[in-house]
Image (cartoon, rainbow over all chains, first blue to last red; front, side, top):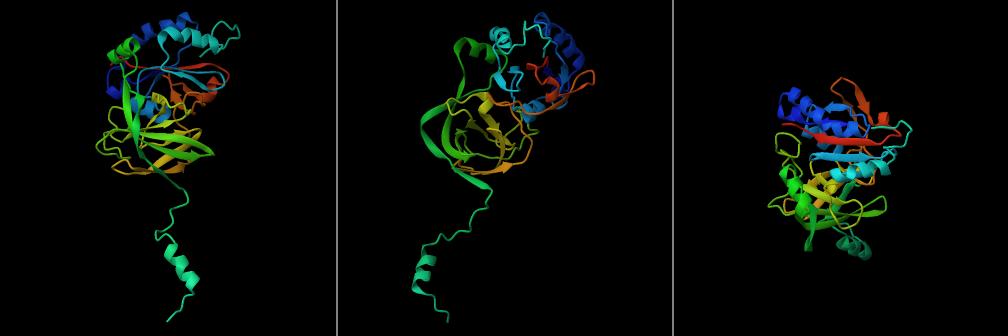
Length: 94
Length: 193
């Protein structure tokens, strides 16, 4: 799930969407869906709901447990495999 | 004249004079730290790149206290500041505008403070799977008063359950945590601005 905080900068979100097309290539390569969420409150929403204060990727496993916050890019695919999100053949995705 | 038996007079003399505290207030004495404990500093952009090369940027904690909750002891830390406050005087609650003190709770007890263990004192703090509110924070950082809160669970904490959420996609679709039950979920915070 992509959480876009551009609205907190009161910017033009159309540019964000074009940028997102490049960003999601990683997820598409891994065969993952990527719901695109525009957070109306931007960084305020990320803090109030998730206590997240910076950019980055957080992985939550199928049991709803937080596995890693701010996952290094080089580790993302391996972590997703640990969680069974890739190559399981059971149709699960994120 | 009312005559008070001697033993009663002694008992009154030895009793603490202050009013008893409210039952639901948890008082935490924050003592100065002799040996520093560091917390991962928030870095973005070029900072993230530098961190990946040179290692984590850290912020030193200067005070430590202990809170017992649900039979477990949690260490709470305060960073070095001129004055401490649980009130946000900024424009909003975002990380870039929030002026309230950002304290840390060692959720897993490993003595290493990570970003997910840092909380703004003006917002409910997650300790375990409970939410706690800061009722008062002494300006010199010597004491924190807390109260267990009934606010919904918030905050991502390593090894703990993701809090419930309700978000809306750019297509207007509503998404909740339940929609991802049995699936791995990736939260990718980004912007182009």
